[in-house]
Length: 489
Image 1 (spheres, rainbow, N blue to C red):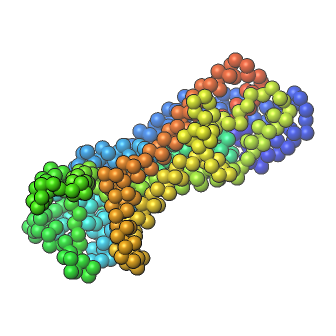
Image 2 (image 1 turned 90 degrees about the vertical axis):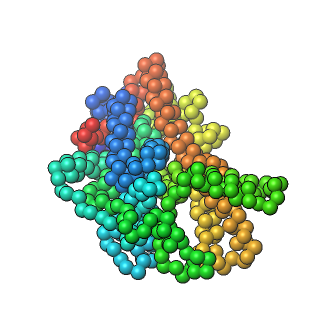
């Protein structure tokens, strides 16, 4: 069966539909070749998925090291965890860095090509005095110096390790394309595990491409302390209240130390006129302290990258589900077998993990919607993220926001700060974290449920499975002839 194209497989089903009883089985088995060599086993799929996890995490870890993010270990560890949950964060970070670096360079009076390229690739500069890291594109080139590294054996070895990784990711894309367009992988037994692996391939490939471009630039940026101290740069580049709209200088966003922010907030509260401070002031001070801690470990641009990753993750899953329905041949095989024999085990939900405790029914958390029966929760997550984006847009200094009436603008600013902005003590756990949890829950719910279903399926086949059932399972567990040849693992 794995050597059949879509048109050939459809032709086989049409021919066998004209036969009856055991003649149908003989017709199908001669084409489907129901043997172990043409099937993927659960152990094989699990080992290769584990290998993709390890390689992708290593690729993203290498990217963080080349960008200089590992100089702040807590943030680097948090980004690795987020990459494991939603691998598209590497692609989201690349898009955000390109956008921000391009906007920053456009606003500066002079253009530095090397500074722009390095900013697009997400490089950071480590400020030892303040024990923090700052994106290169957020600092004016006048306060930075760079040196070109040597093209040594270490550089060639590091770059040489990235080339086969890129080739492996491209091969994985080829396998996925064939599975969706040639064999109709929507009805494959390992749908959810393959989808999880494909998301890792997308994130890992974006990380490897970013690493290769950083390696080709081969630049090391450092803070130029001879021009001005960090405090002087931050103070001199902050626009005043009267010239905030016309200032062309660059604002350097440096994460505050949580302890300093805490002491500053306490000093502000202690300097109030009355000891009976209002609840709003207390909540404001507490919110400022929490935002300062959050900025230190999880800067706002990382959150924007994660929100973009959730949007990309859901979009890829939606396109994946749509492409699968372009080839309903395996569903036609199921209907053919049910038409010819009534005793066959019902495998129609074999790709949906429909087992006790893991049922994708409308009453479960894994609810499905739409004609493609795709998970509903990720779309709710995307709607929450789009709401947060619109809230920031209306509360900012955009043209549309300035057209709003004064009262509506005040409401938009209040809603963005406390409800939909995603950074306050209320909106971060109940808006951003919930949106992330829904995407992660749906994906791992399907993977774990599918693993349980595969074990349950083997038990059913061994207990009461007939030769018809074995033929049906073989069709669902097909192996693409390219599968072994295009995987290094």
